[in-house]
Length: 152
Image (tube, rainbow, N blue to C red):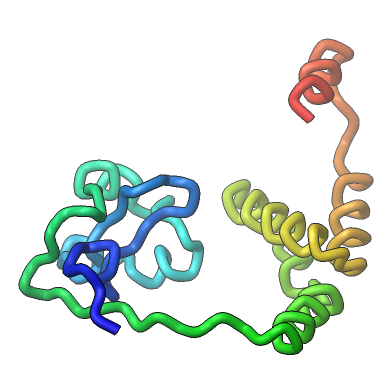
């Protein structure tokens, strides 16, 4: 199937989750040193300033490096049920292990990942995140505690 020749349809165009229409070309040499970090995390934390400088609207006409993205077909209902069942029963030990680290960015990503699995009723993710929260120290003051609960 031939798609309109715009950056959105290019295999090299990469968008940050939650940012509508904006992304970068991963064939841009400036992103090569950061490519593994970007693909692993699904975001541009490792080069945020560069991303902000280079991002553009994916609706623009594609360049000479354009390579049409391959469109995969939707799952059959049985495949979808199997996939959801896999998400529901996946053991989360690898993600839970990262919660004991000291890097807040990694911990935040782990919590986001666990939350996603909890949405699929993954008991391992739920119990692990609950244990993590229960191990956190209490709030230092009543005011901080109220701010936290207003946020949640």
